Image 1: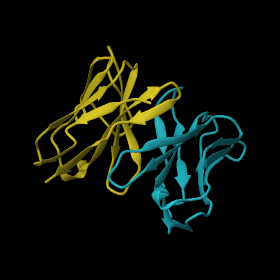
Image 2 (image 1 turned 90 degrees about the vertical axis):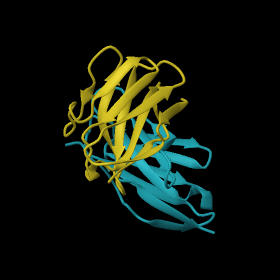
Image 3 (image 1 turned 180 degrees about the horizontal axis):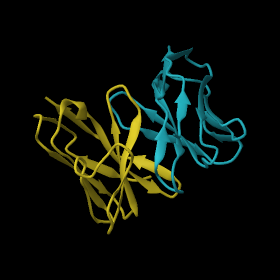
Amino acid sequence: QKEVEQNSGPLSVPEGAIASLNCTYSDRGSQSFFWYRQYSGKSPELIMFIYSNGDKEDGRFTAQLNKASQYVSLLIRDSQPSDSATYLCAVNGRGSQGNLIFGKGTKLSVKP
Amino acid sequence: SAVISQKPSRDICQRGTSLTIQCQVDSQVTMMFWYRQQPGQSLTLIATANQGSEATYESGFVIDKFPISRPNLTFSTLTVSNMSPEDSSIYLCSVDRGSEQYFGPGTRLTVT
């Protein structure tokens, strides 16, 4: 069974620090990797996706992928209290579209 | 991105009844997906809905319990049938836009 594992947290960081969120996946055939942010009571919001090994940067966010280690991470630089949310890692499942398999999420708390 | 709306946004239903959730997208999409997020849990895919064909259900989900309609390329419904308290969840529809998947605002269902 395909699985996506995340540390549930909570992960607490001070404002301005770097938050590092980690995710491992079991299916070596996974090709697409996504990070979603979910505020309490809201639906998930896509913040990053990555397909190739290495780093992908978008503003304060950097996604890192290592397919050999089956590991994907999200770094949030200059963390803000507004970044406090649950971060969900997702990988593609069967087929080339949709069928995302989600981890249980890491709850991040950024302290002012 | 995609503009996705869902109705109702929330409902409280009695055990044994059924609820139909509607999902509307701002432009045509091939596939629509229905997920469930139980309290404190991550997202689980219920089924994939293609226009013009039967929905494809994931393991643990059956058509009799979660019938789905997909009458056109911008609309889908999910019915939660013969509800029990265990069906209390947030139900989310999502769509693909290229390589990215976007979620609707969700329907929060409470079964008493």
